Image (cartoon, rainbow, N blue to C red; front, side, top):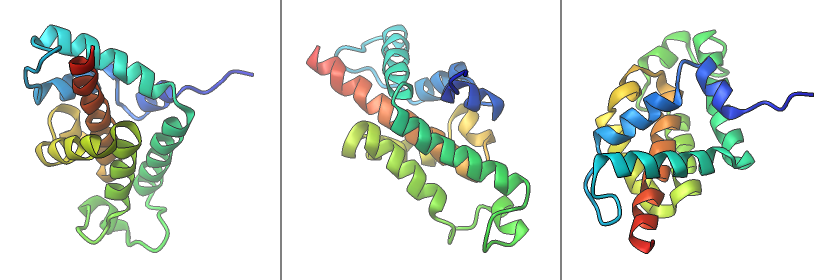
Amino acid sequence: MTKKDIRDELINMGVTIAEIVSAALELYLPHPGVETREKAEQEFKKELDLALSDPNLALLIYAGILLEREGIRKNLPNMQNEDYHDDLACLIADEVLGISIAKYIGGYKGLFDYVRYDKAKPGILSELGPFMDDVIAGLIGGVSSNMYTRAVLD
């Protein structure tokens, strides 16, 4: 039996690792241990690979993927079809998922980075649906906060 990999599920949703890295680096700031963009890219990829190997994180991301798919199919419970496409302010389940992912990976530092990426919506984040933009912003926020933290510690 072949094991499902969350990376493949992301690709099936149109989200590649390269696009995640590119979006993360759009808000890159030089920092001790990651003084150059090249070093930041290398360290971010390492942290991302570590994060994506965690089955709990994979399941949180997968939950967002399933919600996005059901929204596209106009099959979300207790919602009007247009609510999904309008990304209503009263719909916060997507934000809760992004926050959960960011905090799971990077704690409160991850949460603060999530907010930064969620507001700016760099790269692919601006192209994703209401659930996936928060899922990927949470992933980037958590991973980037760990990258900066570990860079100082190393």
